[in-house]
Length: 199
Image (tube, rainbow, N blue to C red; front, side, top):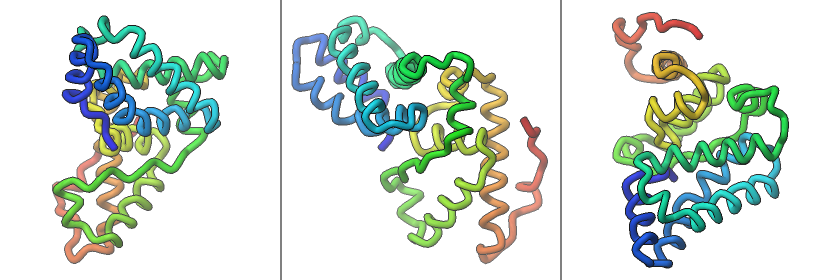
């Protein structure tokens, strides 16, 4: 499930207006993706759960201030990242190193319009292709495609330039296409084979 920016902002606005049930809706909407993101950093189910509950408790405590934040989705992911890194108390490693060193199974997203046309077998092949990506490409691809973050948000979250994120996303898409090409009815078009800068 992706975190819906607009819906989260509406819930925060409703919370600021005194609607406590909006917090429950927000909680159940963001809990799973935030938990999985925390788990990809902390590698402990109990700790990941504690981190998400801590962040969501602070959301409740500060909901009036948070209602003014423009990028609530980015705020939530950054809060999870910072809380997880503080929990581990290992400041010498950055987030990207942690994610690269400990690849995890990321959830498949709920079916969108494009995915409805894909067979279960093709979806399986795509997931395998994603798992074969270089670590940096895989992390960036998953945050954008599976978690719905924008290039700019991923750049801020991982401490990279937006151009690096865009280049890595290009590399990821190229490698996935090349992996799937032998299994498709037609080869990759020549223009899809141009070089992307390796990071």
